[in-house]
Length: 223
Image (cartoon, rainbow, N blue to C red; front, side, top):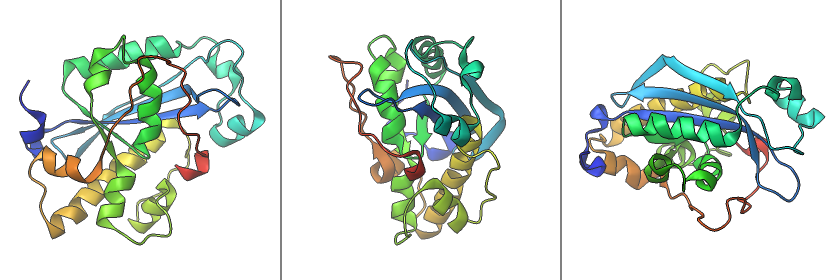
C-alpha cells in the first residue's frame, strides 16, 4: 500500500462508523448495533453503501427501558443477531479490502470498543480514526457544545427522524464531515491526508492485556 499520509484527499475512501451501545454498570459499553457508510474520493457520500446490523450482547447483558426508548431497539431484535466477535471479524475483512480511514462523531468511543478486538483483527488495529468533533472545533470554534445535533443544526443539515440508530447517525456524521471539509477548504484547502489527520486524528488505545478494560463512560446525550 502507498503511504497513507501522502495520499491525496480526493483519492481517499473513508468509512463512517457508529455503534449503538448499552452501558452496564461496572463494565465497558457493549455494542448492540453497528452502522457503516462509505465516503468515496474524499467528499462523495455513497448512500447506497450504507449498512447496519444488530449485535447480540454477551449473556447476562440486558437492555434497559431507557435503551429501548432511546433507540427503538428491543432485546427481541438482538436474539438471533451475530455477536460482537463475529461483527468485528466482518469489519476487519472490509478494512482488509481497502485502506480506509474511520470517521466517527466522538471517535474515541468507537475506537475504544474496537480496541478490545484488535489482537485477532489486524486490519482494525492499523485503521486510523478521524473525529468530527475535533474537525468541528477547528473549523467552527465557539459553539455552545459539539454534540452531533448542535453541529447538524449549525450547518443547516436536515435532522434525522431516527437519531440514535446506527445508520442514520452515520449518514448525519458523513454529511457533517463533508460540510466541515468544504468550510475548511474556504480557509485553507486540504490536499493531502496528513493535513487532515493533523487536525482531527485520534489515537486509539489498543489494549493487549484486558479486552474488557473500561473506557471512559459518556452519556449518549454527549454524542
